[in-house]
Length: 133
Image (cartoon, rainbow, N blue to C red; front, top):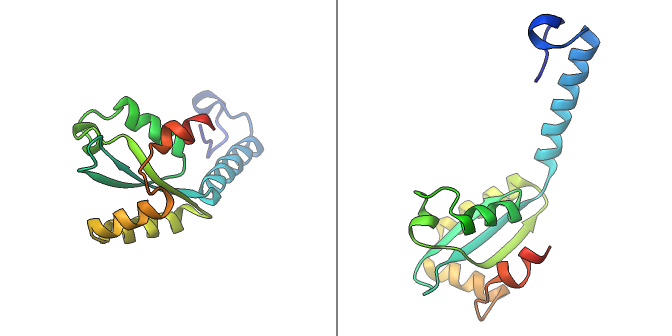
């Protein structure tokens, strides 16, 4: 909890210094998250008929969401899109978001070419690599 005022009864902060300290730690934590790199990834289904492009700062956590269908009404859950065929790390999440938008703006052939550049046989990179990290 972030304390903005020194009021021990409602916030638990005992002094203005503690409130500033909590605020600084939260700001630092947000800064660390913004500085973290971003992953762009492409998933497909078992028959390779559907492609999904995504972006995340936590590839393992996001892949677990897809695998476990954490969001049952999402596109990937409805179409069983869980096979990771492409991923790339960018220095910042902003750079990754820009690349994801570029990829999503392209056609299917461009996405296939991109996936083939890393993974020509479309092996499931989640099973073979990422899940072992």
